[in-house]
Length: 194
Image 1 (cartoon, rainbow, N blue to C red):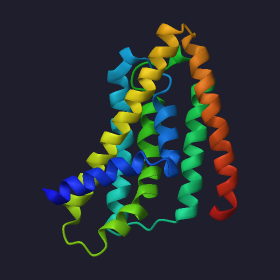
Image 2 (cartoon, rainbow, N blue to C red):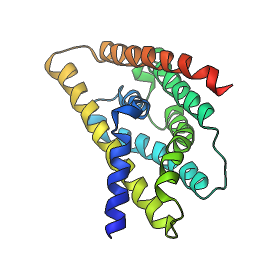
Image 3 (cartoon, helix red, strand yellow):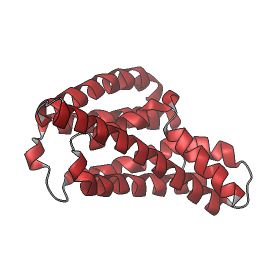
């Protein structure tokens, strides 16, 4: 149980670490088009992302797949760019039901999981109880993501319901700002990736 709490804490601290803000930006832009009353849709969306990153995190930590860190870091920036662009180009009214966004969240989660893997591998070292520690780390990551989601949904509520910014304008502001940051991030990472 002590190991569980340690790896749980490392998981949520890792995703909330401002030095690795790319994951924070992705979760923000992923759920930024939703309002607080859409929490069920957001829960499904974040769960799809979690399933994706859990799969590749496990495969990488168990040395089933090898990670090219510079390429993965570049692709993480691309996932943020693509999600922000989809938010800008696809009207919110068209984002109903189980859509392409859920499939993309799952796929992009696969890429982000590889980004988490080197950090977790360095923590595990030669540990013999990898499954329990991997599970605890993933639960911690999910907890951190939920905190980010709550923060963005509360911020969305403040802007849309209290300040009375139109939902489309809020989406354009948030997605455009994150797109700009991700564009710079991708430009900085491209030369190391190829």
